[in-house]
Length: 537
Image (tube, rainbow, N blue to C red; front, side, top):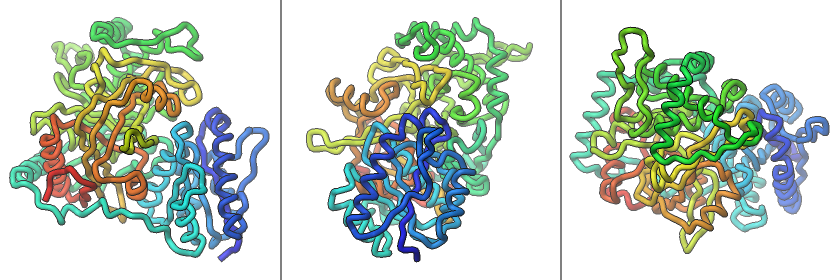
């Protein structure tokens, strides 16, 4: 094994993001390298800062392959993450690497290294690549240093994951088992179609489910093109878009608009998003989709405003009505009337499958069927509890927000990521009991972690402070996980995303978790029950 440790820094594909995030990345790298050098080891950066591009990130798969050609095959490698990153830039190099791998993230909400590292970890798990992982606020705390010393000594870093226990250790209520069996049998018999608008967003290898993992229980992909979505948007008339915009105005939703499209949310951007909403429903209906995911971040971002408004509306039961495209046969038929068309942000198929199952379980139980995913963005202690910041750009339904539509505000997406603008459905998730979950791929099979949590209200000033240290344009959920600590969650979670849905109360949320676990099991998914307050023996 090489005595030299090599540090690599994976970044975004977008130059604007890499430039803006470089300072925070460099600070994290320096702190990590100092910590390793204090332990008497040599660490070198495996690739230089690029003065012309004004950052030192690996910014493409081609670039990553070039870097790994010059790293000794058995050398230890540290992947430092202080930003969002595209995992496929590094995946080929890490897949073939024979030396020990350590992924490390800073604990910061401003530059989402935690989000990037969780995504990379999920990709490595799916690919079967052994790795260790650590995170720290300043890389001087004893927990971080203890783990670092383990890794430097040639051992895998050990974390406490005792919060996650196999479903076989629990007894599900009989009625939950019956409901789960019936729902799974219905899915196998009748099948469901998952509409994929371009697969593999932002290098999220962990977000792609192999077809053969889903086909046995009746879920099949319809691979769609975002160019078709854009073409369909161009075919939507202005009057229909204005009707959606007016429906939202009557519901009390606020749009913070301006006149400069480079920095402001404009009416033209809003109408473009309304057209996307209409086009997505019509394409989904044409192909018989039960759930859809729009990639947006690549390709469509260069043609249209952000997909986030459309995503959140699709996930809501109460939303602007859209009829089938007039062709002489539609007869004014309203598409997916009175129910959500579940949408999974960034075509995360694991979240899409979860949304499909959640929708069917919650509908069976008579609960509000709205579900969404969030990024596991950040978290801090507040009044004795560790309170997560779950936050995502799109797909949050107004039903999840305090005040519903009247509590929702649409603000322009940050130009760093969204050149052509478009607004979000921003708001604060209402207090209540939730079920959280994540489906992931490990050893070629589907797994699911399920747990219970509560969304809580924080004082407006604290909410605003958390918004300002993350992304203030995005909807937020303040969440407290039951029986799962910050570090336990980070050690076990296999994605940057987490799925959430509300129960009517604690007992109802427990019932929903039990039925969902039973349905997953009947589908052949390996289930872990995480934490406490889930009502299972």
